[in-house]
Length: 401
Image 1 (cartoon, rainbow, N blue to C red):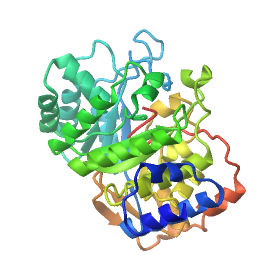
Image 2 (cartoon, rainbow, N blue to C red):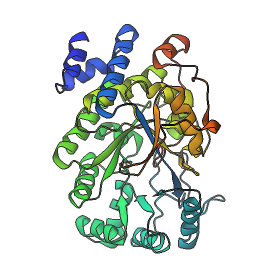
Image 3 (cartoon, rainbow, N blue to C red):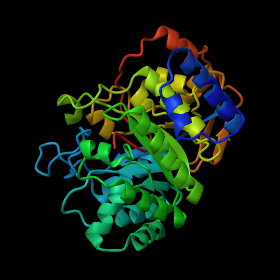
Image 4 (spheres, helix red, strand yellow):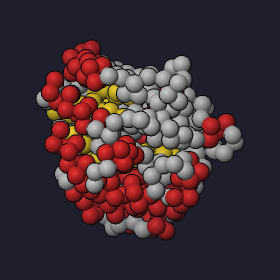
């Protein structure tokens, strides 16, 4: 462990064997891993912790895919099924803009009879009403569905979305980029090579993406390492990944858990390990690492911000997918609350754009944001909180898929 951590501190790239060792860290090894990840974070991005003012718009919960880890999807005739109109989507985006949002993140279920051009029409409608709003929308799974419904080649379909005003895509629908694991989670979902092709093609057209990894279900540490290495390979080729977002599995209301086929979400140890692992394995290639506060809760999120992460996600304003899977944390955090928590761990808050351009650095503490130091640190929390499974929900710009 000492040799691998020193290798990282020297700026040398870590390989699969190195990553597997780190992924199994516990006890004193875990404390050392957390400290080194925090140091690498400081070296790469400094003391600023960013957040984005955004809104999630989950435009429909009707979906035929049937992912075992999802509590959100409904059949078209379900009593609580819904599908927002273009006017309703634009209204939500406009409301977000009035509250200072610079981004709307748009994702939803996959209705069998959906018009393949609906995604284009959503982007067009938002940009017509709100030209300055960044539209961060449509997972690789949704893009594949649009391609299938229209019959257009992938490249042309993505160009159509870009021409309509699409700014970036969420790198969701990734779960674990291993086909055997994916078959257990959702046999109807994209294969790994299909996900990779869509992301690479988007990047080649100047459409950036986030990257995600869902952990805490049926996967093992070796899957984390292979997944992260694949993301690193893509980034070396394209440079189009803006951030890495670990997503803790929300288990309570999912078939995957209820049928005894998964763990009960992630443990605290796994949360810290995965965030630290992402920082060290992606070092120099993906410099922004986001915590999902709706999945982890504030205390664990702040701990992960001291284990390699540097971004607090988004204000959200609305998030339906992870809540449906059993999320217990709130759907909205005002920007001043983010700033309070960030200052509480001795860091500097800053609002960012979707692509990590700093919009405002809040170096001077406003009187209404005064806060006592938050009563935790990543190292202290290891001593005070048992490594038990926890529940949360959601992601700024993403979800349990």
